[in-house]
Image 1 (spheres, one colour):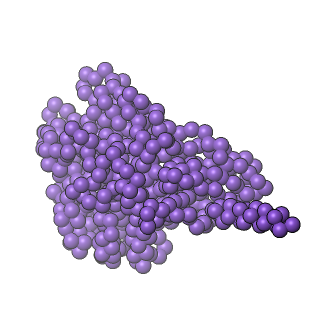
Image 2 (cartoon, helix red, strand yellow):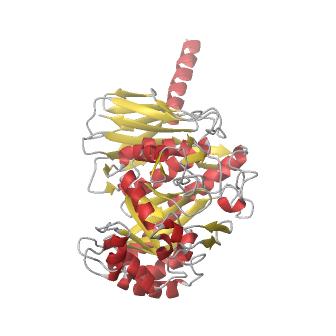
Image 3 (cartoon, rainbow, N blue to C red):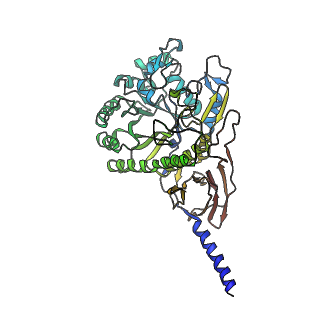
Length: 513
């Protein structure tokens, strides 16, 4: 009898331990908050091989192209529904003079790209070429204007060239260059990193300068501007406070924030993109998760001056920044892209989705061959990175209704250090389908989830997963599909409860219908 009682006690304690180890997640019905598609934007600077050898091929290239714009790249980006593309920088924007990049290409002046490798920029890819690319991608252009070395007149005339549909000197030049009707570009950045490469300004000086530039960047008929002020670097909360106070919500559509994940936290020795151990992985993910705190604190400052949340927080540079690949030009910022980077992308996008009341635009740095690239190219070859596949998974959230979530994450521990292992976001699209994106940062342990959907109605669950055997796994030109999306079968319905077994080091997106 004692033996039987002891056996039952052991069984009960085992069941209780299992229940304790199961993470409880609740998903609430949608309100009015939308996950803007523009959170899923991208960034292409005149830097390294992003534009040249990325989007833009040689005049007599045998790589399939249309007007020198590479078609396999266009097709890949259209598949993930790129909503907007930021150009021409970055630091390059504040040394770029737009009139050097229009007219016959053989007459365009050359310049030195002093920020990125000291190479000669031939200006063959300019305003018309960029807007042709955006048309091919079916995305909105986001132009960063030159405040650092430019003039108010220069920016004003660029806006006129782009957006005015009437008689003026700028429209006459535009028509002479082959574009009869204006493009009507909406997103307009007034400078970039004005605290650093964009002019080393104080926030007080920049906010005064912004008001002047923004005044003369006119709204033309049918083309109202969404003016975006150059915001803070990482934890510079005083910059945000000064801009919100001195510029005010009525004069800007958005205010930017830049934050990069450094594996080591040290700009002088950032760490390898492919050769890292678990300790460096842990530190990288800890630094990635700081985005939650940084966004929250900047949002709180913005709330003080803009309680109705009219001004968007625009995180128009984010991603992992590592040391360049050995043997490549240090000024070209070429790095490989591993499963670790995919986990960073999924985690960061979950943070943005959960702050979509304030974060309404973001741009991963950068699209091709630079930093946390979606695509790598080598002559006629092209590789889709693990980060690309995350954007392919997460496109279901674009312009969907945000679903509030509540859970307590289990810990991912390494020695005496720990971070949350799980991050999640959810939305409901126009058809009623529910999408839940889940990231398990723990490289060793799976997570059991018991999800209460409450009033939300659904009948079936399907899913996709991105994972690989090693955190360091990458796609290469000889093995292009090592890290890729696959069918996920670890989710099932039990009444109105969703049960999920989330594998270690994985990104999963579920669809409930």
